[in-house]
Length: 236
Image (spheres, rainbow, N blue to C red):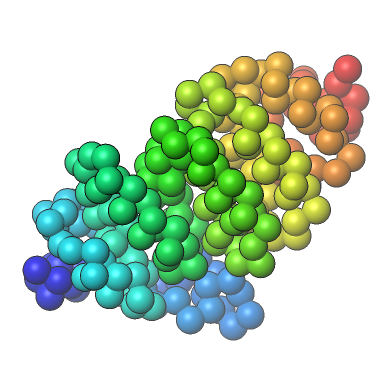
């Protein structure tokens, strides 16, 4: 089954798409994606192909995650999400634990964003006694573990639980990486969609420290006059 999945992905590879992915994911020397390999499979094909292989075992998924080919990792992540949604009870916990064991393997923002809300976020929403894992990940030196801690809270936000994303965002105010700023801003914007007052209160409290990229992302849905005032620190 694993060999057939790889064969299907290779059949849908495209050189131009691969070059586009390489530029988009910053694969030049010294950039965060240095060493990534892309074969150029469009996301629509990736999802369609991966869905056919939901029955693949966790050890085989581990082999995909261990690869430096990003489309293999993406298929591993998509399959895990499908498996998790179908699973019940201890099977869900097994997939969650597998994901946590492999957080460093989910090493690009696309794979993180497509997977962690539906596995990590969902599991922790229903097992909040384990939420401390998010605070362990946010303190990591690994970029992707930090991003997992942020984006997993999307599931909480959708359920009107804002405490954790606000706490995590506060912990990351001094972070230097652009991908962290964007993720924080994105999740704060989602908070604003649910309760604008909560978002505005957080932004006013932390205006001096919040990275400008995070701020711009967070206020994308605000009226233009409010955006201008917030960017200047003038909104009362």
